[in-house]
Amino acid sequence: MKKVTLLFIALLVVATLSAQKFSGLAKTPPMGWNSWNKFACNIDEKMIREIADAMVANGYKDAGYEYIVIDDCWHGQRDSLGFIHPDPVRFPSGIRALADYVHSKGLKFGIYSDAGTQTCGGKPGSLGHEYQDAIAYASWGVDYLKYDWCNTENVNPIGAYTTMRNALFSAGRPILFSMCEWGNSKPWMWAAEVGHMWRTTGDIYNCFDCEVNHGTWKAWGAMKILDMSENLRQYAAPGHWNDLDMLEVGNGMPANEDRAHFTMWCMVASPLIMGHDLRNASKQTLEILTNRDAISINQDSLGVAGFRYATRDSVHVWCKPLKNGEWAVTFLNRGTKAVSFEFDWKSEAIADPLLGYKLDTKATTFSWVDIWNKKLTGTTKDKLKCLISGHDAVLLKLSAKPKKK
Ligand code: GLA
Image 1 (cartoon, rainbow, N blue to C red):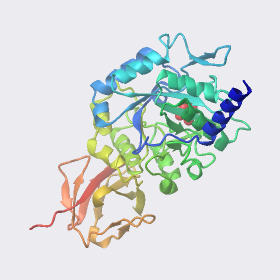
Image 2 (image 1 turned 90 degrees about the vertical axis):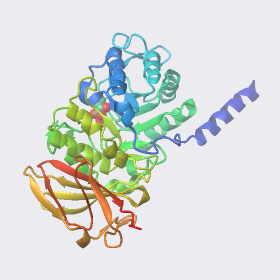
Image 3 (image 1 turned 180 degrees about the vertical axis):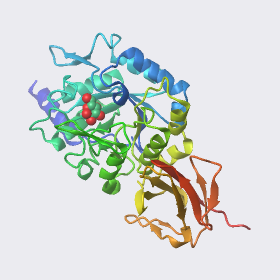
Image 4 (image 1 turned 180 degrees about the horizontal axis):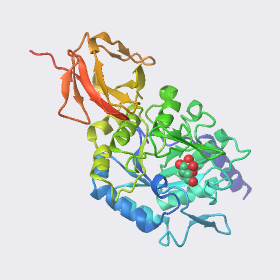
């Protein structure tokens, strides 16, 4: 008996010491949908099933979106042994059945918890129940865990997130670990071996450039989040990404602002987690979110986040090196007025300040295509002239022009 106990303890120690994050996940920024931005706590299994249906029927899945994630408020109570159960009224069939349904659509399923005593919505948190919760998630068929940071007084973030990482690993089912601690403890400095993505800021708010003060915390418009995350590009790479928060595309901003927001999330290789109602989005919203070329810039396998190359009055010029020597270049108009913009490729010296990639238009002529308006094309031999509406972005993809034989 003694021997068995000792063996068990030894195995546990070995398992804990050898715990790691699941490798092979998030080789490109994760893509999916999350319930919070649109529905907050108003979620139930019928709606989530309908969202999964719409993800497939409306073409999001074909465009690359994969995860259906239920955020806060799916929880019921813990039982006498401490195991968590879903809200029996909102999720009467149980989470396993819901995950099975999502899987039957060829999609993956994600869930939400919190490193503290309670979630931000006041539901049971995972503190002290990490291993139990990880076992429950694995047994339900969960593929993705978003792990929040409310009610964590006196909790050490590195310890808390590493504990949940280890718990997930020992439960054995590969689960993508999405860390949501709002950038408080600079997770980009320590979490490459812990999570697959980490939030860089507090919550996004559905506006272009505003901020909303809630007293103890602030919510941020898309451009504010972009600015706050600007110096973090060196920390993003295949397997671990800067998460600029879930998308607000389709939640009420005008199309130009949605387009600029989406363009920039593609440029900085943020996860693309949609946050609108997939069942009844407008044609414009669908066109923005399923633009294959914009998505391919986000998903480029080089895995390099873009950088701001220049600021010309209200226009910010962003560049992202892509595989095979290609580049994405964005002209983001932060102002409200349309700008007639000129860019003489030959007189620019675009170089990645961190990684040394060079967009050398003197040595190589590139052809470009305007991704939001495919009819517009050109080459870097000629000066670029374009009209950029207020709060909008022109997104170009540049490829080396094959030399004429
Ligand atoms: C925090 C997170 C949000 C969302 C809510 C849920 O604010 O940052 O993304 O998960 O909690 O309560």
